[in-house]
Image (tube, rainbow, N blue to C red; front, side, top):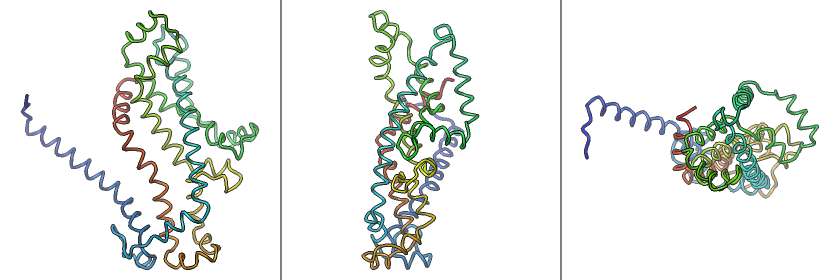
Amino acid sequence: MNVLESPSRKIFILANYFILTLTGIICLIPFVNLFAISFSDSGPVSAGEVVFWPVKFSLASYTFAVTNGKFFPALFISLKRILLGVSVNLAFMIMAAYPLSKPKEQFRARNFFMVYFVITMIIGGGLIPTYILVTRLKLLNSLWALVLPGALPVWTMVILMNFIRQMPQDIEEAAMIDGAGVFRRLAGVLLPLLKPALATVSLFCAVGHWNDWFSGLIYMQSPARYPLQTYLQTLLLSMEEMMRIADVDFIQLLSMMNARTGRAAQLFLGALPMMILYPFLQKYFTKGLVIGSVKG
């Protein structure tokens, strides 16, 4: 059945489309420019001739990025961090969100723990105490130093908690009548229904781990242990020095690029995995985010 829309409603929808399209274009412009610079020769880039399309197409920057011996080890460390970090995050979020989703009658200490977690969102321990703790736990220069300090992201845990609270209680009660215990109800009944929410919080956690460069800088004592974003951050500050001390085999390659094209290529490669991952999780991401944010 077709529903007649008022003129004001049509104007509102058109305005939404216009604003969202404009916002999307504004967000894409830097990536398009970065993409064009990374595939351009150094001369047009230095002259400011590259805007949205490569000028004098060149793969020199990408060849340098993947053959200098540092990009792929850093990428591998980041991928290991995401796999380990997201797994730890999901385990802690599920264990915290499930009891906090229960009413006060079933979990009397719910308000106390909720206030406790909210306080950690507002007040952090500080950089120096956290570094001292990581040092005394002998986690420096290990992958756990990048994962354990942020093992429980409270904000995404709240999204997961709200999603669980909106699920019909009859489902869990039916499993309880059939004799299922707490862990059986959680693992066998609730978790299969939590796929949209789990995909949402997993994406949040993965992006957080992927974009975090500061933890690698302070907890990794050797540049060989840097995750990708930390390596890219140091690269942005020392690209000219890297090109100066590069092996003689790269002389011809370096003549076709400069620091700006090299940075653009490595930054684009750094953003590419998340850009590829997002479309596969988009349907779960949208559903989980909307449902999980309706009720507090």
